[in-house]
Image (cartoon, rainbow, N blue to C red; front, side, top):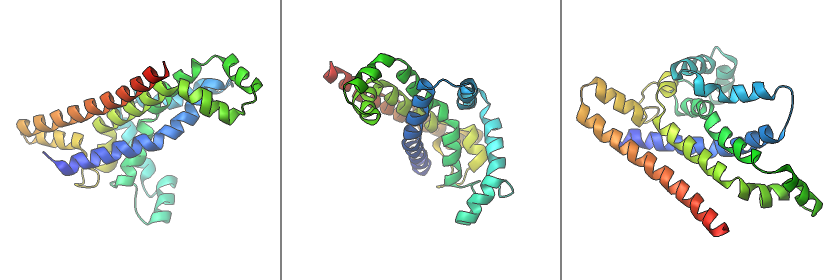
Length: 222
């Protein structure tokens, strides 16, 4: 079992989930409540990582992270390091690849809230901010939980994008999914089986705990 690779995977999944949750909340709510001419284009851009082959997305991100590209050059001027083949690079790539998993469940949850419910809250004297905190967030809690679980689980299994952007640097960018691939390439099927089982177990436990907490919250509310 490659514990270092597991540690990198868990750290990457946790940071990706925590960073995308507030962004997914804001973007999902905005897309659910807004009506503007470019909305279908915005939704298509958010969903694009779902249909793009991971290696294609990883290639374009790798090119964008290079020091000859504006983003890569800006990052190098701030930190003196490159985004490619670093943990910061695979984290940024993971944020892009997992954006639809964070946004879409939250958007669908906000779309189920009747507009007259917000209007009633405003007429009762609640400000838009307090309406969000006291009315909307409790109602969209299952969507938030789904976004968190899907983002975490998908990040754990991400392979193509991470390999293209980060390579396989031990302790830095070599995740458990890449370690499994390396073991298969080396004909170490028993080692690959152990790590695959660990990845399956961690993903299942994570999703089970998160959905269990969501179900318990709904039960208490009921």
